[in-house]
Image 1: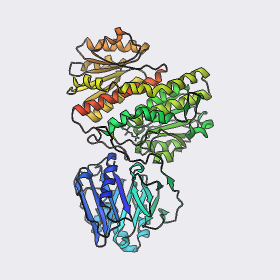
Image 2: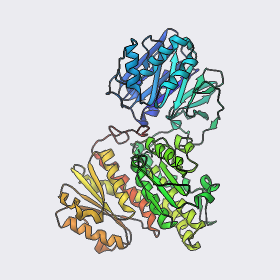
Image 3: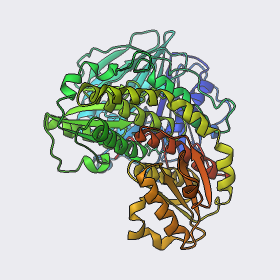
Image 4: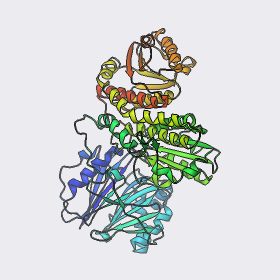
Length: 611
Ligand code: F6R
């Protein structure tokens, strides 16, 4: 969604500020702006579109404090007036803000009655004006903030500068992330840890209901919303803080798809060992006893992470034999669910910041459930909220469409199911066989990636099609849905994922030559059923591209008009990953051939921090 960045304690920082804004733009943007805090006031520059549209150069003079914002419109259209920063009526307070002020209409009305004028349609603009209103009464910024925190309702993070405190930057957090990077007596502020400059190795992640006071060459001061000083920890940033570029690839998406074998191996390191025949997950180790008492697992997430959750539930039930289901987080948080201290909620998320998923954690905790995160971004909100969790080790994912993270989410949930089963019902040979299969997975993925050109050639025939249908069975049903999501998301072709079994209950009516069907066919009994589905489509004039698991017979393969054959897995749950890779390549090639914004699809953003 929106992104906040800032620098405290550095001269001539404009270029760096602009780069920080570009770095964080992967989280979403449609307009942006910066504020330079100078001796004579704020110099605010706003533009529509990407931060690269900001001026090449801006003279920052003596200023040592600057901050900026990428906006992803929620309240009000994409206009310069609505872009941040926003300045108070008296021109003395400047604010950038992420999240939502839920009671802004009420506050705005009351401020208008007091004589304030509003120049944008945003909820944000109430913040500087409310601060102005109270500051005129208290003449003390901290006392003012303590009052304002009480008045603002919603989930937010904001950065604020006041001209009476020119050498100071104030940061506040309630629900929306914000962190402070420390480097050489300077501070770098970001609402996204992976977007901090790569040379920053230490960070303080602001907790909820806290504000920070930053001055160059001074230590960080953090207080709670009532103004009481609060303890905080400085965390060391791990290897995720490396400079991130596309390298030889055309898109981040391509890089992220092609580096999957490496990240699969990274995830297995120290967790799954073939030579020592063990599965170990440090993140949940000390809670294993509690987790093993689980009566029911509920897996949740949004979008691709929800489809990954469905595979997680499938793996938990089929491997560990523990009752499991998956419900999308947006629905689950308003669902009248049954949970108790024997329920484990598994939250699946790349960013660790998805608002709906966070909502579920709070609700389940209230009913006494245990909460577990399957998270990529270290120190993200969800990783802090859950009782324990597993970091999926996907590294930075810059493309809006999630690829390597979805694969590692699924992989880690399969490993978790394998671990629980090894402590419970499974036979030693079953665990051994799963371990062997997990250890050979990255090589199979490498082989699938070699099919990229072939996939591009096949789909060049369909790049202008009006719609696509993707069918799969069993664990490949959510994978079919994930294909459809990715195709829609980045190539803008309408696509639907279905269970093959549902075909004749409706979707078959859509079959015609301009609406191709992708059929996901495993080498098992359900694969045979998929062949019947393929015939249903071709006999009605439809075109079928079959993705076949090696081992499917020639006769099966010949039912499709085009075929893509991928390595097989003895443990069929791993087909969820191998088939998924093909879908990533299909959507990337379609998007590329159609000239779409592959890394930054329109209307979408990387991290959905509002409901
Ligand atoms: C699609 C995609 C989204 C995310 C969803 C959840 O390619 O990336 O559907 O999976 O927005 O995001 P996280 O995983 O950050 O909770």
